[in-house]
Image 1 (spheres, one colour):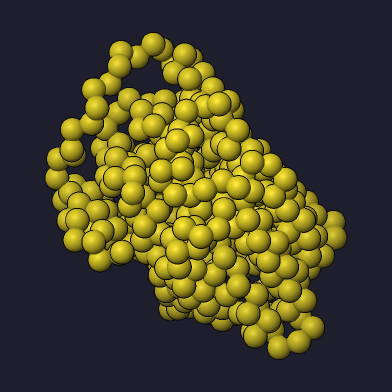
Image 2 (cartoon, one colour; image 1 turned 90 degrees about the vertical axis):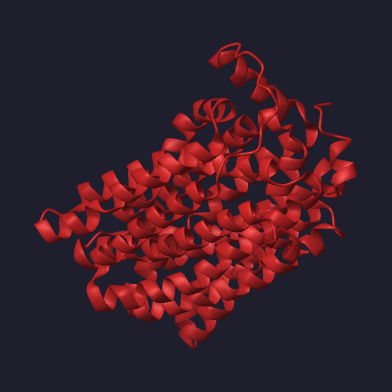
Length: 416
């Protein structure tokens, strides 16, 4: 299943570049919050702002970027985004060395990388169906998710060690280098296959309405996007509370946190590997509901980490989350890609990302506020409870019977 994909040299090069880039980004995932908390003494609210700034550009820009992605060569967009993200992240170690590192600089880096990530992610998600045929789409998404999971497995541990060895600011420089290597792999892929001839552009607003019409007129896509937005809002209450909870309440070191987060990556590798097999046997709604309920329960377990053997409780809860998260992701990615024609992939993905990432920073801000009022532990508990409960909504609509097989999906590719 996976060996056939890896024999495709262009897919293999994309996979190699993204594996390196995701490894560097996993380092930054722990390094930036660590700088904010331990170096700049940020609290839950400031940390919520830092995390939210990287997601806020999505609801503002993503819809328009999606139209451009359907007009422009998608691989070229990824190349430019990688170069610029490398330059932006390099500002952190430079600022630290020059003595002007502070929260405003971290906020600026977070915001700019968020803007550039819109371009890269939408081009990337829309490029995969262009690179492989629909029959291999679930396998391709799962393979890329395995790469992401392996990076998440090694990245936090590497990040913790780098932070202790050279400092958090210099560790961010590793991510800047990883984007350069990703850029080189994309260039190495060579010319793209010829895409279907583009129709003359009717204008930004008409193209945007066409994408919105496809998503919200389609019963499966409409149900998926509304439910995901509600679930994600409460799922990301966890982030601004996790680091203060771990550092200030549980008194763990960055290296220890890094290795605990790596356990989550170990579960994700397994989940990503088996996701195509699960998708071939169970409907999308049942997969999304079951993974959501169990993930919410895992967050609740995290909130009780101080009541017993801390490392075992955190590690156990996060490995469950890691196991289920790629199954959830590959399921919803593959379903929406299968239900959308190629010329609408950019716009469809931009609409989903607008809702998905728009709910993410709002959840971060809500989590930061709850953490400042009730404390990180109670906020993590509440976020897990709401996330799990809302995931049951996936079973109330047409998603409950939605098939992830190619013939069934292609029969429903046009809006009803």
